[in-house]
Length: 367
Image 1 (cartoon, rainbow, N blue to C red):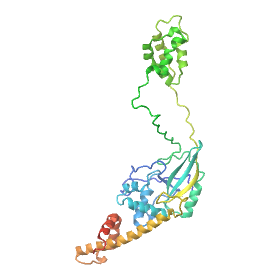
Image 2 (tube, rainbow, N blue to C red; image 1 turned 180 degrees about the horizontal axis):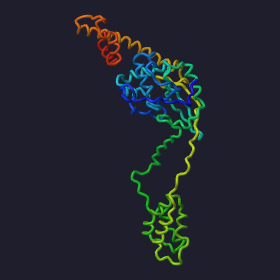
Image 3 (tube, one colour; image 1 turned 120 degrees about the vertical axis):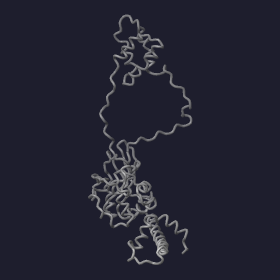
Image 4 (tube, helix red, strand yellow; image 1 turned 90 degrees about the vertical axis):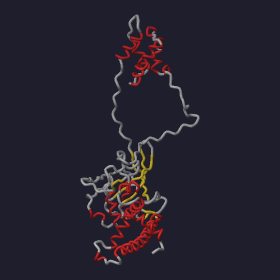
């Protein structure tokens, strides 16, 4: 039984970086996507993926070495791999899903402030898991506390909802006039001192000069009443320079800068529903039947791709053999070759499968 709450990401050393391994600068996924380990497993060994076809066995270590939250899209993986393009990576991801290494899962998260959202996780297992194992894994995800599950590339449940665009009637004019200094609360508090105490009657010029200091008071949490009280209490019988006295008091009695309060506890979030998604498209188990993580359409597409690849491989092998025979003046048995002919053909298809397929289409029917 997997333990989804205690996963450890293996550490990968890059003493001599292999171009087939992920770069340390491999992009992290957008919110809601990204690689996640399905369970704690032993460190990677070369024998882990020997049951896969050569291409998948080369792509699997790349995925295995990615960090949690790394981008798992076929375009990002193709950009990181020196030998295979987007279509080859996309096909391999389907096959790795069918083999039990990969699953895409949607999780419905409910936060204690009653906000809800769906997020999509991409789970990876170095060990090929059965369909029953994955079904139990999905069942175990329901009810999990994901309050602190904010790793890079994973969905954050506390993201604010974007504010709606203002309507035409609410939109501000293109060239709005800046607010007058006389309309600010700080200026008004200074201008109204004369009504509280005539000894502190300030001129317009003095109010303009002192308004920034009064605004600083308010930025530190003071109210207009606090400013009035600080400037009028304990006045001498006669005030000959109200502007100077106001400046002195605003500077000497300035409130302290607010200190940050205790950090608020994050809102608790919990997985309230889990749905398995097809590993090749956006369909999920509520809308289509999934077998080994794939819907029927994607399985049919995989079958058609395999048949087409076999057809193109046979034709490409025929053309490749004829080219070699022209170079050598006739057939050469494999016993006289350093690399058997079929191995050369297989390598050629792996490296340039898409280009060869396009070439064979254009030369189909020709010798």
